[in-house]
Length: 430
Image 1 (cartoon, rainbow, N blue to C red):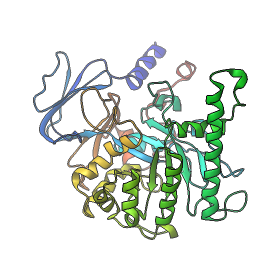
Image 2 (cartoon, helix red, strand yellow):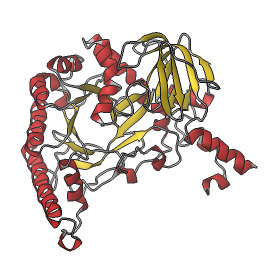
Image 3 (cartoon, one colour):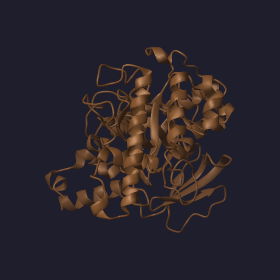
Image 4 (cartoon, rainbow, N blue to C red):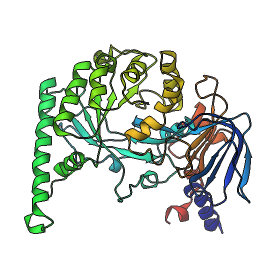
């Protein structure tokens, strides 16, 4: 009987609801259209089925009174380190074969803390101490026991993710790492040339196994990048480093997202002409890194004015996932429009991860990832009340354990979430 009850419990957490749920009377911010002062959102089987001011509620749906609340899409974080990702080691500066899939902890409490901040989709990356530190993962912040429960699968069956690269100060170290900025880019360029040559050999084989080159996981990954199957997320701060990345992208034609771009405002025109989007970090206590001394809150507004697609990220733990909406608010204070700021924590990042057909806005057919807020998303007084992923509530501020993750205190650093506290030996062995 205990085992049956536990199975039912996990079914509630790990599978979308089978009964439609209608949220009534909320102020709805769909992102891809005008705000709805008093609207209805209906979710069923993990998808949004209806959203608008005049929505017919399905028969048998569970009705939730959301008057006085605000509903908006789940936040998308384009650069994070939650889950304790470990990528490349000290053996070499270029390690594209390393998969952080093999190092993430699904029970890391920073995942629950990100849920409490309204983040529902995230790009988890290895660090920036290498020219190329490994493969990133795009995750849905579902409650899960193993990292596989959080993966996003693409239509062709591949696991969604990108590739992390870096230049500037971080990868500059003693040999075998590069000692200069020039050598950093030379190493990257040499790897991409090898990747091109490997790809051509595979193509020339025409599917004949006897003609294929020996499998090389490093170059296989670079070939995926060259074929547009994997996006390069490139850590870069200083204006000259940014331009070096753009030069590399132009030479090899890969899909690129610029990460951090502290000096982006200095080369906004060059970034705009390249077509590369910029994932910006907003730090409210500047300092620490020499190459980030050009930081200004106006960065996002100036990049947007130049025509760059601008999103925001936490770089958690550089900034706290629970306070992600603050980045949008600070950018508005410095001149970015409210609409672009909210777009920057939702749809802009979804576009950077090529997941905009599924997440980032509230529209019929999209994944039922959304937040219920106590007030306006840019108000410092507003709290995330509930976070839903794939139609399942993963955070509820009224639940004591969830509130602990949101506010901190004794027990908030425990590795197991409320979900895992229900496990017993039989459940673990399933």
